[in-house]
Length: 270
Image 1 (tube, rainbow, N blue to C red):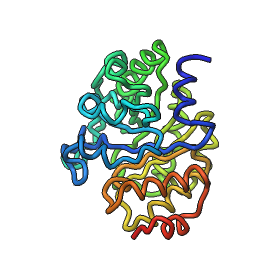
Image 2 (image 1 turned 60 degrees about the horizontal axis):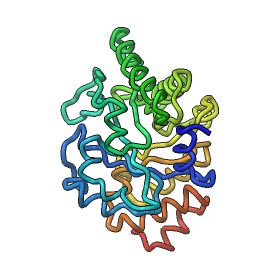
Image 3 (image 1 turned 120 degrees about the horizontal axis):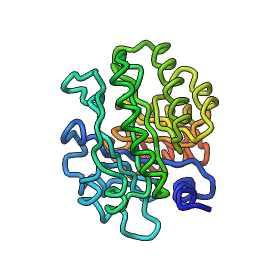
């Protein structure tokens, strides 16, 4: 068993589906509600979750969240893409290296996230984004570090459901072909086709804040039903009245297949 396999098996402990809490939003948005002081935010993360996604600088600041036996796995995002800067209305999806894999590992990363945006309408930009992805992926391969590849389309707010699905389907398969170990991407109207076309575990993301916690749990349930091996939730897991309770409920839905309505009652979620 390789170092990569050991780390992946830690994420999918006992072959169960995995829950990752994302708190890397400040890497593109700056401080947002619920994630202003990240050293306080990590205290709102229930240790029952499997991983925490964050930036290289904040892993150093939040090291206490990972420094005990049984703690969630630190997952570090190591490239920076303008596609995430919605507040600046960027849509060209330029990507650069934010941290070398060896530097993320020195900080404590056990998995790295590398994002990829292609289908931007610019061949040179698409090729450059693939080059950045492959450069970092190959570094990770040499160090035995698993890669969580994120396919994130450009101009997501203007895409029809059909176009979003088309891009997610092709982009996720391309990530698989480029050698990613896992995929994080949008839930689409035919997500079974996405998960069925990828030979690696696929995570559904939480995306925008849902109107209710029940809606968020239903999204997670639908993603798992359609073949996802886990979820990556950020705002929906943090910007709630009781993050600990919501995350415990989320784990029940994702790992045990418990119905969303049942866990809402059980954990007294609004």
